[in-house]
Length: 383
Image (cartoon, rainbow, N blue to C red; front, side, top):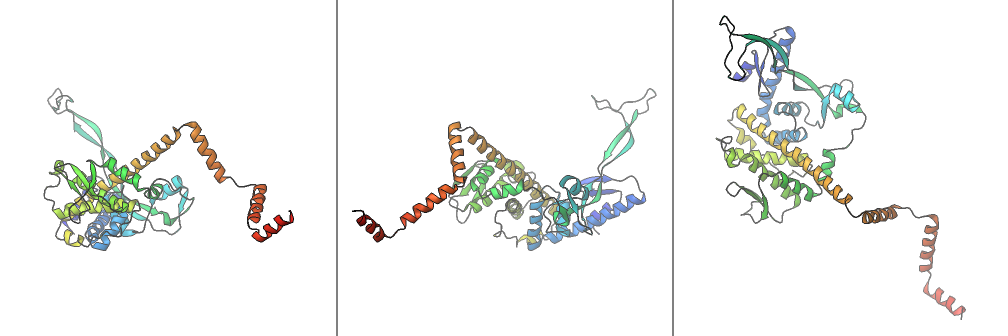
């Protein structure tokens, strides 16, 4: 067990990057601490195992599906049920989705917040000066205050495949995935979220695009497929967000390999989330990159990847919705006569022909298919 886990076994537990102070050593409390410690041990081991090329790609797939979840919980879901697509708690499935967990299904363990409040005597300070106040006898003035302590517990979630009941509406991301076929909208949304201007032009050698910190711009190679253009844009926008001159302090000590790995991982997660082909992504180098790195360093990079990809996914979804809404508003603002004309035209196209129209159409077809010599005989008989 590492020093990190030894510290975790004491009264101070480091979970989700926060300090959790436990003050009640009841049997239940000790039992929960043991469960959390066991889970954290698995997390530490699992994080190292993730950095094998196939395992890493599988983990990024999980992160693409659960981009709003923490690093710890995406790791836990990936370890226990990598094929999961949509998870919720037992009661949440019942109350919010009218679905029910199948009998005998095993829950997926995750770490959930469980804050508690304690009362504590605290010295009173002057709100203006910040100086400690004293009583008439010179003793420190104290008051009982309630302090909310962040704590965590083991919770269980279930994948949709473990449930039955009412069908879920295909809203949000599913609609947006279909909308990715409208590449122009997707590219427009990327241009809107980019922190720097994006230009299209020539690039050197085999480069598909690049971010220039000095010129504060992104250049994307012209003439590429829509899919490749999108993937390159996400990659370079990641660089512009994370590796710009203003982020020099945060990136201090990061190798070029780490910087590229972060941008490539973000691009993979974003594209995977929206159903854009990611079969050409390869992370064969990941095992070599992670070798010799401490858990904290690995976790820091993974957290950067998770936060950035999640922010980009949420903003892209918002931009796509805005683009669609603007399109609808523009359509509604058209000349009423034009709109009415279009509506009538659409109605006519969708209208089923009447029986009389069908008979007239068939009669016309029969007339057109009469042999020419038969028509000529008829004409001669009339002379």
